[in-house]
Amino acid sequence: MSRALAQAVTWLEDGVCVALVAVTAVEGSTPRMVGPAMAVHPDGSAAGSVSVGCVDGETHALALEALTTGRPVRRRYHGPSESTDPEAGDHDLPPDLLDLAPTILCGGAMTVEVTPLTAADLPRLRAARQAAADARPLLLLYGAGEVAADLTRLGTAAGRRVVVVDHRAVFATPQRFPEADEVRVARPHRHLQELVAAGRIGGDTAVVVLAHDAQIEDPVIEVALASDAGYVGVLGSRTTHERRLERLAPRIDVEALARLHGPAGLDLGGVTSAETALSILAEIVAVSRGGSGSPLVASTGAIHPGRGEHRGARGVTRPGVPPTDIGPHPGPGAAARP
Image (cartoon, rainbow, N blue to C red; front, top):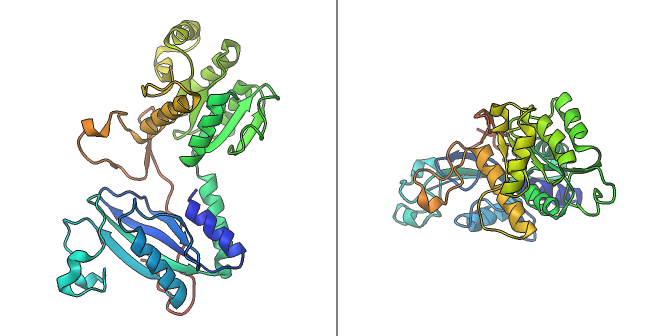
């Protein structure tokens, strides 16, 4: 869920008018997908960002201007190789100064819309916030150890709905996992069976088994590999995983067993629980986005191909979450969205 959208709702609930900056269109390689990107308070405070720095300053200034005028503003930013079209109204600069207009350095182009919002916009923004929260892909963690705690923090930051499950009540507590969306005391495989039966497991779901106990992990791995989960990973050394495969081979067919990521994670050389969690999340991202997991310096081509798509472990391409329609609020000078 967009931090900008969440913060905009909070400020509006406090009775403060807010300017919400949304990316409404992208072309080529850009640092942002479409959707709410930055919320700006009248005192200048801001949550979120539009880019990785190249146009944030100007969009922040545009947001403060929109709060003063009460009118929405639209701008298109492009890479330095693209010429500016004065008729498109990109910038209010003389022709001889167009080369000084803010550009994005990634080579693509992006259109942003700045919309001043009032308390009247709260109902639809709350609905948009809830829809964005519900649309987050699931990250299911079975086992409530330290790696799970670090993976919960990282997974939440990466925009996933994180659920932690353990059969031991002393470990599966909200206090140990404050960032988790849900913490359950249950048999892991039974919990997963319930989600499968409810149709809640899809190609963008990631299942990570962290129990490190054959009696717990084997049943949940069987259920996970029989489901549509796009990523199924399990913690353990290579020797442990070899023994695990020997145990599972009589019960799971070869094709399904080949989907199991074990040991889970990319080879980052990490040793701490946080580094282990980072390597696992990195692999989840690579699998879901169709990345190679190789260093970018060793690869060629676009860094952000196929914006808005999730690529599951079975090669199924699923559309991403559509942009949130924040729209300009009805009022003087409000323009219709394209």
